[in-house]
Length: 113
Length: 115
Image (tube, rainbow over all chains, first blue to last red):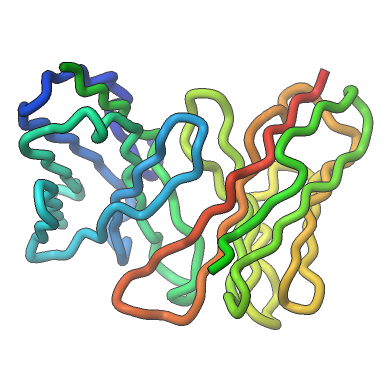
């Protein structure tokens, strides 16, 4: 089983739609969770951290379910500019806070007019 | 300010040749990471450096891969006797002091093609 698993998609949605991605992780002791965004042929950039209580940043909402070991990202009122690959990222247990991150393979989102 | 830079941006090499990829992290960042991303795949961790500590090499796929970081700044990833399966985008990232967000800043990557 992969450490971090995502549905690769692609998800094709119209502008204004709400879309949700899920991600599961295998190590229950994992410490920190994030969503990164990667535009085509560009480097990944942090989108948001995922907190235990859930957190929201504008149209984006992230949730963590430790019992089921999954993370979700909800995008409301999708924009064309949201088209990208969304990477689920987990910091495994152990090591320092500088330790490596484990990336999922990404979920491709295409928002069309 | 300047971000993470990598060179070359593209490298085409023949199978069996050695290559060196360079990463200049953000000034002052103490942690530096190398990942690779094959077509349609997620990022695969290779190695990370943290200050003067011994690097975490647990992700290096074979002994043909090595990396060093001189003076706590610039890092070089070396691949010896390249194989076609080494073709990928090699991404470097750096991170500074701990803060409310654990964020690694990525460079634009080096696209390696082994023919």
